[in-house]
Length: 168
Image (cartoon, rainbow, N blue to C red; front, side, top):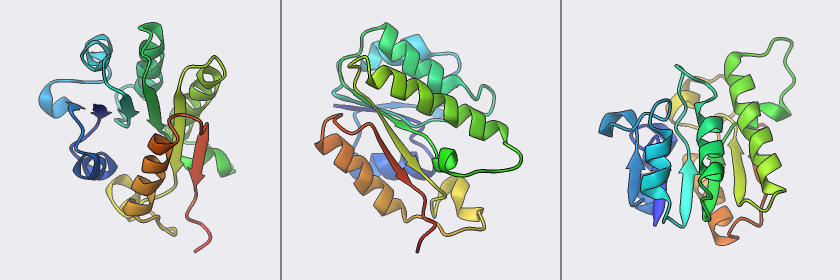
């Protein structure tokens, strides 16, 4: 069984189309990661895989808080956090989004070393969703999903996969 947050648009929709997730959580079906974290974890506690994909502009740290809630409630499956390759990019000015995603990456790394199965998939701009309008080389969504499937196949033995898309 696979739980997925943020399944209605962009990468999340494509993940669900490919993996046929059994537990879907988004604002569209009444599960806001800002306000319903305990309920989301409770309803997905028996899933083998939890894909932490949804991002909230209302509370940019909501993904990190959801990861922490999974840890607090002793979730025993594999958590895959959809982050961003921003940590590989040096900018003069950071955007809030960069800080939020970096906090998710750092939290996941910390928990990984406590034997909590928390993995990071950090793609750059993807040819759908928020990344489709970026002025940079874009990753194909299928390549990102195949990286996700590799993480699932390796069952948490991968700490992080970074996909920049810069060298095409």
